[in-house]
Image (cartoon, rainbow, N blue to C red; front, side, top):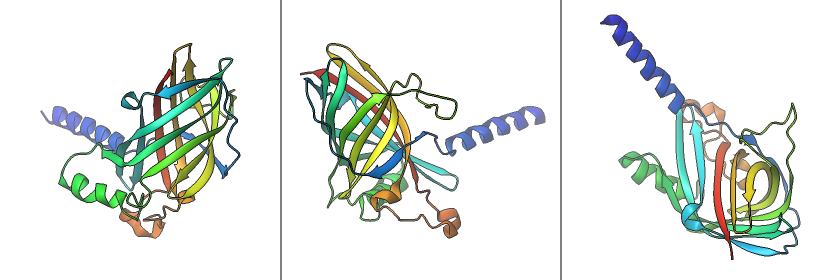
Length: 221
């Protein structure tokens, strides 16, 4: 009985640790804003009902995953190559995976407040493609996204701040559909989100690193 109890406790402990371990993504490169790509070719319209942006913020021993919905999005394709595109994210659509009063009535409004997204003032965020080129993994730069085949760069505007970010992605494209997947980390401080990032806060510390997972589907117009 004692052995069984110890085993159950060990399994529960490992599961708890896994749930509270910060997710890991590719390290996005962040630079100043770049000139948007000159789009040409066929237009693919994002299926907003089947696309989402997932984020995970984390601190000491805790993760807080959530999602945003896309308001709109288009991708331009010519000769089987992506030539441009842009996506609008509805910040007010923020939904937390965790249920319960503390998360839904306290944490969610806090995230939407001026301490983080300031949704009343900045209700949307935008990503505008500046470059898409083939991704080639090597021993020092291997994407965590299985089958990553492109490196995507784009101007990401959040809270009125625009920075260019570059990350690997898996993009599958045929005559009528486009699917894209990416998993990367960004430093929220680049977009003036500095709340709680002082490491002297101890248990109240919130990491400056935020994990982003993109899952996009689009259809030819």
